[in-house]
Length: 438
Image 1 (cartoon, one colour):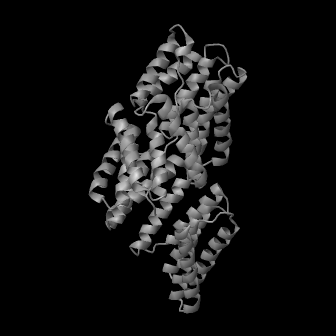
Image 2 (cartoon, one colour):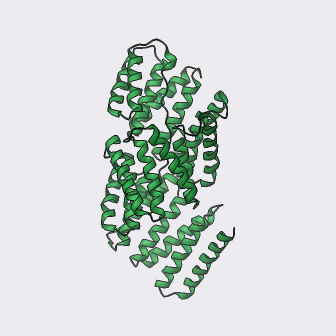
Image 3 (cartoon, one colour):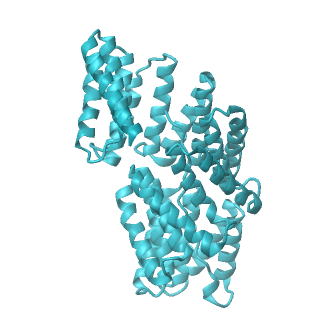
């Protein structure tokens, strides 16, 4: 199990300011964008649909239709309606490309947004080239220090985080934050996602004090700018609470999680993935505080939400399966726990590839579950399969390698093979010593 630190892709709306005199379309699009900025998504959708109808009376491939489609699709993304958003972004992109690059800023925005849709769906191989194309287009037309370049760098870093390419993340996050601070100032609202993402990276590196400072700064910016029930405020509360939970500050973390869940349910609906994230985080907090009976229903609800909102093969569904299985093992509820881990394993093989780091983690979880259920042969085979994948990787994660050796040592100890157990324990110790000295 893990605490899920929220990162976010950033999807901007396109501006209607360039289209001159007010029309029926102009009035509808302005009302839609005003409602969207206030978090009134139902009203925004109604106005965007009206604007789309008005734009369809204009000449084919009119830029106003492209803008409307992009912004309506962005609203759908906010509501986790990814399948509805994708064709709208694709149509908008066709309009920009048809117009021969006359609207490069709008084309780049739609590229960014379509890439984010693919990323949210776990379709990372389709997202990366679009983000890279967007960065190149924005650097070429706007210059390397433009805030829109920073936005896409932030999103590309978030994508690499999800793909497990952690060493490529920090330079992107740092460059994005530096651009925004230089061009927009230290308190601009657009800094908040970059601060959150860099803080999440610091947590992974064990730099908790630096992470807390960034999370607090992000929360302060949003509290000063947004209304108290805005969904982005829930994001910041989730992140800071997650950090407090890691530090054992349960009394500080719990009310922040509950407030974040309440905001997300009110503003996004009870079946939104961000609600599942909040539920997962609160459940993890309860596990850390040994309140297991309170954690289980939260994990189950989060799994249900993610399956319905994201589809059965999304990486976040795999994470929810891991969380529930880990809890059931912890409280000795051995109800075919390996089936949960096996399903998570198949999802990760499909999304990341059979020799990827996420698959190694799934195999480790499954191996531990087999051992606890006294299926020792299956446990040994599974843990060794994880080691075999690690051996193929050019850059191994030492913490993962040490964990696998330790789990094999424990397995052999249970089986009465002290010689093999000592050998694996020594390998684990050597890996940890090498890591601490490097």
